[in-house]
Length: 115
Length: 113
Image (tube, rainbow over all chains, first blue to last red; front, side, top):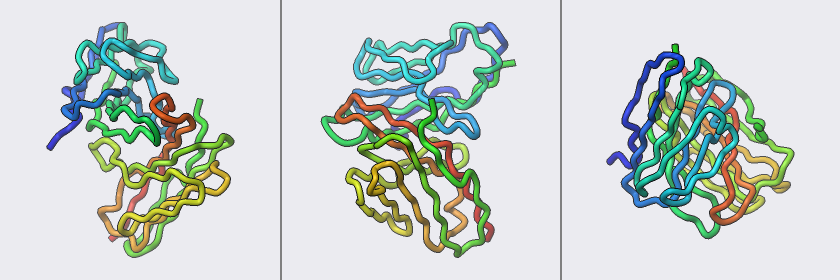
């Protein structure tokens, strides 16, 4: 029972191309997140969203934008892809938490290579 | 920037051995989480810790929330080949929905049958 789906598992793009990474969750979660994963650096937060049409910058937002037009869908956009954006991108979602941690459910990841 | 130091970076052990890994921070966290990522998959939550000093088990896994609230430990007893993967710690400083998770660099575990 797949709960967070990232539509593209592997992508190869050229420098300067516009790239869309799509993520859909079926758990009716309020929160959605985009992380990038690089060896030795762990997971770093790019953007997150608490609600439809709301977005907040994470730790490394430069070069990225996001869109949340529907509750279940959170898109990551690379306006002009660069080679240093070659990475594994992980989408996650969580319930709105009044206390305690945001327990994240992750998708399987999208591995992007920019040539 | 990165605020969690996770060690060791990698481990290669024999099946049946016990494993220990830890995360430390210069900042206090209110919550610690441990995730496991298997090859080709996203991370999956193993254990969540909400109180300083808390010790929680999940099968052969045991994790502790350090008393100082600046560290956490994960132990795996009697390792088996399916324990292979990358283990991440994550800490949260804020309360409610506004706090963000900060992840460690990960510990890559390989188990030799």
